[in-house]
Length: 399
Image (cartoon, rainbow, N blue to C red; front, side, top):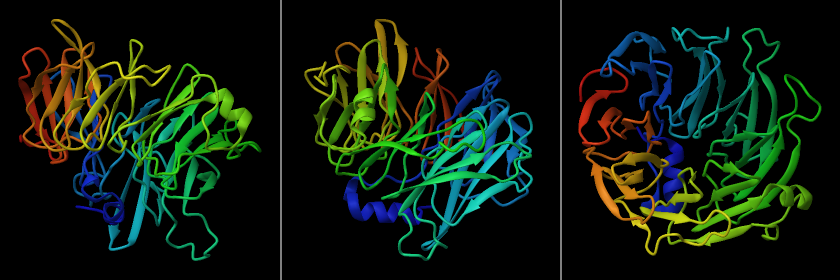
């Protein structure tokens, strides 16, 4: 079902507005974990042609679901973390959960951490801290309260209190935060990109303190990519940015590119998908289906023409191995998965999905896995492009 926030965004982005079904499969050990569109965490066998694990489900199969899980679950230290939300008109409730990766039993005594808000992006996990972004909190009636927040929770079962701290933002936070070297990076729908101190383990005076911010002038939903002292993000005004972390730390705030290696790239589409760097090339996709290869140091295009898929690119690409070298598999929000030669950008044979894919693609080398907006988990054989299995993500029934 479409949530209230999707309609809010639709008013802003017209025919580029995303819809549901974004949670990517996660491979851990011998299993694939997946958050279903209807709001249940389930598990499949990685090595047994997708056998559905009837003993693993959160909530249990006999209980009501949580509401749609839009962000990809995180498997960390024998735990699975995730978030969901559901709305009755504009009355929304989000639930953040932590369960055992072995048997799906809740780790927290309260089962879930609940907020009257929307949690669109995935959670981030750093040690025993769980981080996620929100829109406004519906039961905070003070007009001076923030439009959104970054929340930090204590993941330990015996934590004296679940909430560690929260950081207010000027806009809704719909993207996924990323932690690097003790700093949390994320953007908001007001176009501001933040760097916030994670602090130490547990309570810390420095935790939740803003270190710097950079304004792009348009909504940021992209999960940031951090590599070699640089941050790569896109926004909803056709602009993609490379920011130098050291320069941003020194500047504290601003909107002007000025440091070594900082650049911007203008496309004719908005950026949602997570960027990818592979063998010295930066790959990015847009909501109008364009797929680019750039020089990460300069922003100069590596291909003469961008690749193109039908529909939106909301999920990030994945590198696959072809007979002639490497290629990029790119999810199409409308139909099928496009494949492009990594060196030239030439279009190769794709994968037939009979429906859109807006979740990040994943691979274990020989096989490609896709979660469709119809809530099907599909396993493909990469060399032949054949379907190994297609299973409903919540029920385990064949497609």
